[in-house]
Figure (cartoon, rainbow, N blue to C red):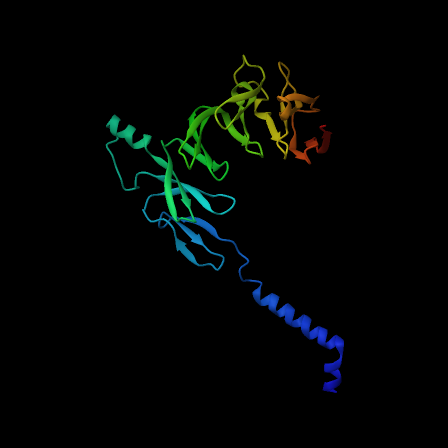
Amino acid sequence: MKLKIFRNPFFILGIFAFFIFLILFLNSGRNTGQTSFLIINEYNEVWQIGHDDKEKQLTDNGHYKSHLKVFSNGEKFGYFQELHKRDEYFDYQDEQARKEYYENYLALMIYDLESKTEKEVFRGNNRLSGWEWINDKEVVIYQSCGTECVGFWRIDIETGEKNSGNYGVDYQWSPDKKYLLAYRYTFCGIAIGDKYGNEIFEVMRDENEIFPSLAEKTKAIWSPDSSKFALIIKKDAQEKLELLAFDVLNNFKIIYQKDLEANDFSDFFWENNRAVYYNINGEMKKIVIE
């Protein structure tokens, strides 16, 4: 009986399939995770957590750290580091001491995992508000500069070359990281420039009026391939909104315009670089942009 079962080809295939399943099951929890990095506040240091959950401390200076960001290929990461330790004090009544303390407040540190080295690439005041990667050699740092004012610094982390710019607030990079779009709510508009601080294009409404009505409704979106952007904005001297589309590759030429059906909208997005959608009164609208 046993011999007959063993010789049955379906029985043999079943045993083989079972062992394949068992091997896959036993290995399903191994080597499937990714290396991650985090700042453990208890130590104020950056730690690396491997796919095997092994922990490794990468920094060791006791300075408070924040805004940890890893580049997409996982070979570098950066973070803000306070230049003064939390138990460090100064004479707040001394204007010079106060200025020196806050003008040299934060540094952006870049850590190279291959060489296991870190370096300071930028030093700034307590108004630094954030940063992000442009590519594996460049970063941008944002700095608050007043009411509806956010400046930025572009820094080459290898050469130290840097430049500044200021287009507005709420910056949005084009997907190809060639342009920065910023909002100017005070005068109801948007501005676009490059990473070197050169303003290239703007759309403004009711320029002689501060905080005109519907300014907060301004919304811009880049197409996924960065070749176009769409904009919903107040019409000049009118209490209504319009939808505009621009050809980025043709000097930001207007290629579409229509008045919106109402002043309340949601779910504004691109699909496949050729159409934009938005929701008005619960109805989804589709606009083809050629």
